[in-house]
Image (spheres, rainbow, N blue to C red):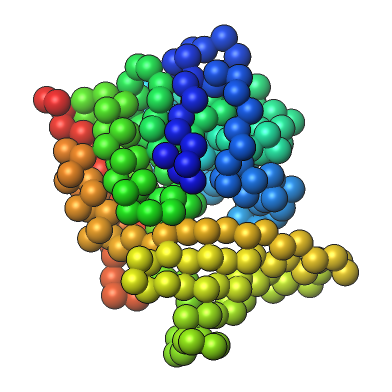
Length: 274
């Protein structure tokens, strides 16, 4: 479950409408997606770059792909354009609408369901969960449940790919108030400024943020609740789901991890004999 809502059943990856059971989601993530659908492409880019696409296509090796949190199609559309069959989960009506507006958006099967339960039939060669996907789940239990359910949907030898920050995206030194409140500058452009106001709880590693976009005289505020997990914690979840770490890189060019790396791409594999 996420926020009290369990998966409402998808009818399998080739369901009649590709939108789950038809029950309209009333869920915190759907609300987050509706907030972000109009600005997400501007903040993080409308599509993954060529290096990321090359890695994902290499891992997929022509097999089927299931994306967790498909959003506006930033990952799914380039994969579909490369000739892969792509399915994905997305709760937000606004995100799905943006996806469908784009070329190749109609080629992607979307399950409008909670992805923690990964409630689809069949198996997949590749499950990408990138752009900080794991942090959007609110507890360690949800993150672990997702790992275990992804493992069930991977074909033998299939890959689960995660992109995450190595360290918390907080400024050095103490924050305001009790020391766990921070203001982070995300981006500065000629016509816009992006900010994060973060309230961090170090005990359970959760963050409540207000992400603020100042652009052309307007202000957009989008709340996001997240939970950070370190690379070693993700590795433990993977082992508990019978997945093994086979690659870890600092970026999509497959650069080695160093002490100064800001992010990591971790590739977990299901045993070919599973």
